[in-house]
Length: 310
Image 1 (tube, one colour):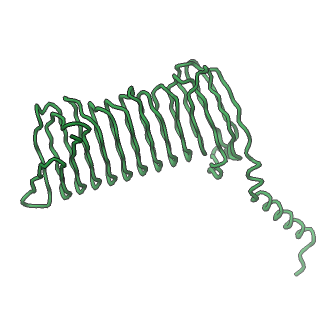
Image 2 (cartoon, rainbow, N blue to C red):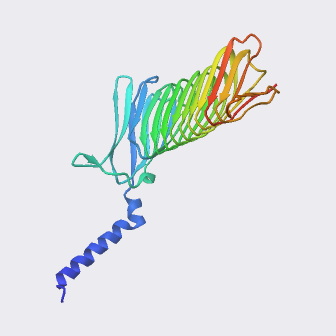
């Protein structure tokens, strides 16, 4: 059967268009620059929402929020708005019939957001990596499918799904809460109150003297190096994850209660766990000094190691 010449030309035209749209040069050409500026309170609140790609937040000495970088084809615009002491940065994607298109070119979007150094920061990110430096206010960071790196000077709360968390905290950071579903956690610095919750990620924690600490994991391993205040409280619970707890000085004056249903208990200072006569479980309970602090560790099948630096 003969195909009409007009049809052949149409097919060829469609093919040429598809080839153009699929080419890397065309995709790269669809990125466009962003340069938005808005006055902001020197100690106000900055919120960043719905960002895909990579976002870097930098504290500076200007009373202004500045958003620079580039965005990909899926982004319609970047809204920077302010009301009172609150400034919002919202990356808006194209919509069709009320449904947001799925993100196809996240790596094309690269944003740097400069904020007043004294700001508090809130983020809600999807498919975006986040890096924060130089922000002195409290931070509340939420991310799905992105890695998160921050330096914290005050209160810090982090919630991630499928992303690693790296935190460097200053001595004035007295409250740190981190929760992950499948990401690893690395924390150095900070003191006071600490709460870590992981599902399947490992956590490496090196902090100062703690007043309160609560560590919870399902199948991830947690290693903690810290001091404990004379009246401090440290609680750790896991299903199948291991705990390694290293006190930076001598053992704190605490009442210790460590137990596991089917894991192993060990110390670096000679104390031995007692084993239940009717099963594989083990328990180690003792008091050090005045016993004014409390240390409780409970695992189902995870191992527990307790050490002191001195």
